[in-house]
Image 1: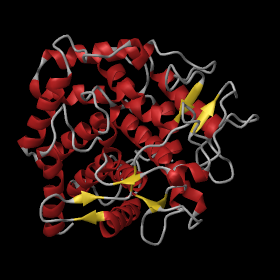
Image 2: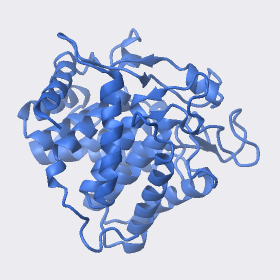
Image 3: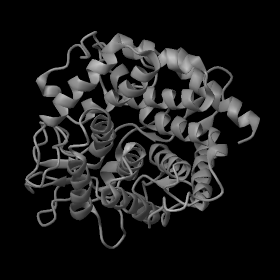
Length: 391
């Protein structure tokens, strides 16, 4: 990237940071629309992870200080967040805990260490499907969503590596494998957003249990889950490591078939220019970030980085506005899910109809993560290390 683009994106990251605190995060539009104060949630967790990655890429202390201060307001000294009830037992609630590991290493604060144990104990108590996958939420029994793999698996792997003697490596690997078995479409290689083992949800196909569509951000959640899990996985577990690496590259190759000439991807991946469909920021940024990180970690050949740069530049050209006061990032699907009180049916028309907004954390976080990876591009060798690719 040229120095002017770096400066513009730095101002964007700083402007959101300067307008945010734990009780009023400028990027969390869902929470800002509610009258009660901010609570523990995965969107803030994604943003704090992005700022820590910017810290790793730039060495600028302001990103570390902000993350520590923000998390410090949300976490009690015993490592638990206030107002977290049994009803909050979901994979979404696990996601912010991944930042405890770098924060503990960088600050030495004991509450981050205690927080790791607290959320690990909650994770392993979440009910599972008969095949062993965590339910996405207690309120969605027997359901597996791609979102949940990103929320839980990198944290699960971090904890296993550091504190649990790698006892649950095969558990983690098996959960990814079941998702591939149950949720991958053989024709396109893409993954359906959700799977209901019971086949009782209104959106679930009665034969396969899968939801109807290939939602872009769901593909992005899965790619990020695979890359970040591999990042902290011990390579000595040869079979499992290579299995997840193969799954990541297989999915990425399937997704890249649908990359638009702008570099971006559509909200419903395989529907192209169908009426109502649009080029969406969050999922495109997730793909760009996943590729760039995978290349840096020698999980992919360097040639893939060019496709990531095309995706990132597509977002810049279409949706990034560098205003004089508050820069903005548009084209972000605000929220999408399956079932619930709204009876979300998972059809393309449903995904097209969800609000499209600016500066929402689910889009901003992967965009800043991709930016951080681009700042580290000089760390990438001309070719992967011999023996690392394993494919």
